[in-house]
Structures are given as structure tokens and as C-alpha cells.
Image (cartoon, rainbow over all chains, first blue to last red):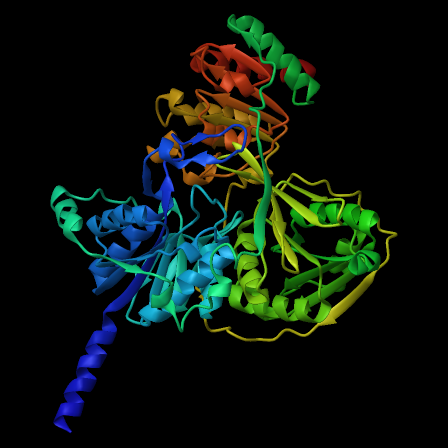
Length: 280
Length: 334
């Protein structure tokens, strides 16, 4: 009886620590990466890989929640083995555990197949209160994976979170942005939150945390590790309903600029323009 | 071939902002009509709202819908994606549309993926063009890699789902003589307690994506003070103030003014870029403006390559002169 009481108490105590999962992706540095003008394919070797910049805000949000409430943060990513370096970076920034989903059968995935794979891994992790992700990735640029994962896990999601107002053991209150208004929303757990860059200013990892992260173990889960959680027909290229039929390289749309170096002349032309537009 | 003969059923998910239907919905209806005129078929629309009535819903018909599904219930006053998605998915299972279109807005981007995952189908984000190819299949065109490439995407599964960027498709003229069917649906009120609204929605003072005139500043302004000058010009022209990313990062101006890849994509009639050099990320957000004016002291700034008119000079000299000239003309006329 006494033992039962203690174990109940322990489980209640444990419950107060939040389990947080952060979804991260390794992307090429989009400002430096080169494109093959013929095929439109990106040359991933032309630029260093890094954590998707939007995900840094999700990691920071997780760390701040943990600092306030206590908890355990798992960074979860799907990608090739090279992505281990980005997960180590996530560890340096404060996550406790890192898992990479790596398998040839996961490759070539669109957002739905990616979401199936991530959702399977989250089910395997099992216990989670908050899932955090960035607003979008700079390479895929869809912002779809978060809400798709939430649907597959049958949990609510809140997009465009610009502020986290309050966290308690069993709920979170956030500000969510739309074009015309901001909404303060509250949700119980589990919930998936997609955060914007406004939500915080990500801290830089310290040298010490970087050193520690270099030695940290990143767990690698292959397709077999997700067996029972993932239907492989739904993963990777085979499980992707969308496919790229072709890519067209955009010629930079330049306009014939009428440049004035004499301010007076330029001003006269601008006034004619404003007149033509009915603005003066 | 069989389904080509039957034609396409396109479902446009309407977006309400307060009491009004957002114009991206009418643009999607316009595009849908263009598609069914080519393939045969019908255009459906669905609208969810707490106070939307049949008169309002009939606007969807005037802009091109043949059939409107109307979900009117107080539960829709909070954008609870689980609740919206459940009702939309149920409707899709009943009506079996071939194509589902929504705006690539906060609403569509949040709701679309849930619905796609539930229907086990593909969703293409942020399309700027939709075409039917010779096989009668939908090609979805979307920019990728900060607008450097355009990807043509096809979907193997049904329905084909896309979110479409605001202000790239053309709405038809409103035709009040168009007739169609409005079907009232009963909401399934599930998941209500999963997301709760605390207090009232706070309306934004600025809606930059709808602005016709934008006067935008960049690092070249030198300080937060510069935005006051831009604000004066903007208000004289009936426009709003925009910004590139550096001033937002430096705290000179609020994020909602930011134009570009990590801000808003805008398409105004006139964009005046002041002290903005023109990074690819900024150009991504404004290069489709009808007319672009650049004022910059550096003649080699990339912004001049996308501008129609440029003045190489000090914006602190040029803008006060512009303001003075506009005021002078107005007082001489008035």
C-alpha cells in the first residue's frame, strides 16, 4: 500500500516534467547554395549544411519552457547521415536527446510521407506533451509538415505562434498570428506548436556546450526501428503523393530602370508617375 | 478518360475574415471557372462561420460557385483546426471533389495540411499558377528556393489539393445574376475544448498584404527615426510603411511591416523602396509590384535591377522634396 502510494506520487511528480519534442531539419545555407541552371537541381555540396534557421526558434522555445517547467527535450529529424551534425548542434543549443531517422526508404519524401515517418517516430517515443517546429523550412518552404504530423497523431496544432505567454503542467497559452489579427489561444497537452521568428531570439551555443555536444550520442533509427509504427508504403518517394514533373529556372525578372542621378530630374519623373497613378 | 468525360468537381474553401469573405476566395473561384470551362465540371465552395448568412454566402455564387455548402455555427468563431478539418474532411468524403483549393494564407496554410493528411492525399503549397495538361491533369506551379526556380508539381492521389497565393489569380467580375445552390450543413461539434480563445482577437493596425501603396525602408535609413519620414510620405499617398528585414531585426520597426521571404509577400500598385539594397530575400516579397521606385545612394544596388524608376541619391534629401512637391500640387489644385 505504502509502496503504491510512493509510486503514484513519483508518477505525479514525473508528470510535471514536460516531454518536449522539437522537429528539426538540416538544410543547405540557402543564401550560398548554387543551382544547376539546366536542371534546377540544387548542388548541396556548394554550401554548408545547417539547421533550418526557423527551427532555431523552436529549439530555443523548447529550452525556455524546460527552464521554467523542467522537462526533457528530444530533437527529431529525418535525413541522411550528415544530418547528425545538425542534431549535435541542437544538443549544443540545449536539447537532451537527438534522434535521426535515416533510411534509404525514407528518402525522396514529400510533406505527407515525411509526416508519416515523423509521426511514427513520435509514436515510438511515446510520451510527449509539446511538439515544437519552425514556421517552415528554407529549402522545402511549405510549412505543412507540422499540421500534417498533428493530424496523423490526432492532436491539436497552433500555427504562427509569436509568443508563449504561460505554460503550466497541463496547458499552454500562446499568441497566434493571422494577417488581420492576433489571437491568444490556450491548449491542453499534447499539442503541436509552430513558432515564428518573433517568438524568441535564439541563444548561441557556448563553447562548453559545443564540446559536450560533440561527444553526445545521436540515436539513429532505421526503417526496422519504426516497425509496428510505420507503414513503409507511406514513407519516402514511394509514399509521396506529389512529384515534381519539372523545374524551370526563373530568369531574374529585371525591369528597364530609368535611373536618375540628378535628384531634380528624378523628382519630376516621380511626380509624373504619381500623377499617372492618380495619386496627386 | 472516364472522369474527364464527367468533368471536374473543384471545391474552393472560402476564407472569412470577420464578416467578409477574403478576396483570395474570389480569385480561386475565378481560376476554378476557367478550369471547368476547359474540362467540364462544377465549382463548389464551402464556407464556415459563426454568423455568415445565406445572403453573404451567395457572393460565392456571384463570383463563380455553382454550389455552396454553408456551415453556420458559433463553434466556428475560433479557428480550431481540428474542428474545421473534421467538418471539411467529412464534406469531402461525401462530395468527393477532384480538386480542393484554398488560399495560401494563415488560414489555408494551417487547415490545408490537416485535411490533406486526413484524406491521405498530396498538398502543394503556395502555388502561383494552376494549369490542366493534355492528359487533363492538374499542374501546380510553385516557386522554390527563394523564387530561384519554379517547380511544376503533380499529385498522384485524389483529391489534388493546393494552397494558392493571394493576388496571383484573377477574380471574375461579380455577377449577381448568376444562380446556384446553397446547401446548409450541420456542424459536427467535436474537439471544441482542445483549443480555446482567451479574450478577444486583437485586430492588427496594418494589413500590408492588402496595401496598394507601400513606402518601404531598409538599413539605408540609418535609424528608426527614418520611418517617421516614410510614414509621412505613405500617409500622403494613402499607403502604408514597409520594411526590409534589417530594420526589423534591429528593432526600428515592428515585424508586421516586414516584406520579403520571412515577412509578407506584397503586390501593390506602387512600391517605393528607400535605402533598400535589394537582397534576394527582399525581392522575393515585392518584385511583382506593378511599379517599383528605388531611392538609394548606391548606384550598384541590386534593387535598381528590378525597379522601373530609380533615383541615385540621399533619401533624406529626396523624400522631403517629394513630400513638399505633393503638398504644393495639392494646395494649388484644391
